[in-house]
Image 1 (tube, rainbow, N blue to C red):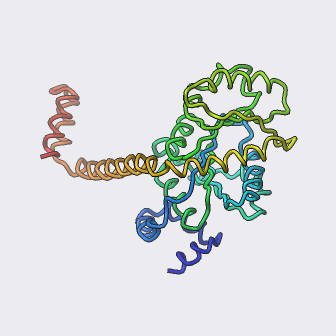
Image 2 (cartoon, rainbow, N blue to C red; image 1 turned 45 degrees about the vertical axis):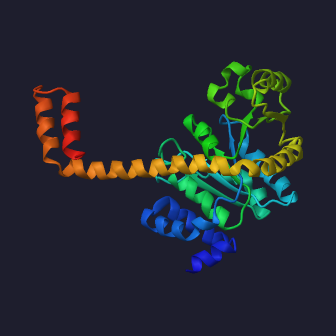
Image 3 (cartoon, rainbow, N blue to C red; image 1 turned 90 degrees about the horizontal axis):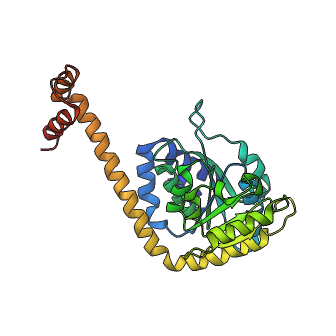
Length: 305
């Protein structure tokens, strides 16, 4: 299979094709995963999240260039909200990352497709494609749409939460979920007014927790704090590598449960469509002969012998 050979060499066309398979073609995705799985699970995954408008794309663009200088080979997966028209990902953000693309970093948008939040099967397998192609770390940028942020922290080894002084004048405006997931908190756009107040608030509110996250200031405009951020990530990659095995066990357990439940759900949907008792009890329910719980219990008994 030439795709595998080209993938191993890190060829862009092969990577793009493999990720498209993982996103859109389940039977082929299963075949591909079977071939690459043994050589995956080796890279550190960095999740970068935070409210929309925090400047994540421009920040990642600069950080990736700095990380390459620290002898790492980063790739970026940007999880975008699904475009309702095409079902594909909206590619606006990627234009801002041209600098890092030119330096040989692989950058790809993937649609979130609304599967349990945005972190769907295709994201896990897209990470595996990039690992097989030799990238480390794999950086995931989330659009910062609600549930996605917390889900990314479940997949990432290192979670970075990006704020900027425009997200509101106080820490109260920051959603509670974000205060619990970060290993690193960045006050980005630190050239703006209100930076010091936000930095102090984040330090007092989040830094005091027992997790003891790192809090930094960055400004893409002034090109300040980026190298420090990249070095912090580099150092953290080595630390997280030591405990990666335990985290991988939790992740694989959760993935396995997802797959089993999904398989059962598909099977159940098929059974319900062909099940005579389903329509029988639905009629009784409509004529109020029976209540929904009783109907549900009776149908379940006919399906799960």
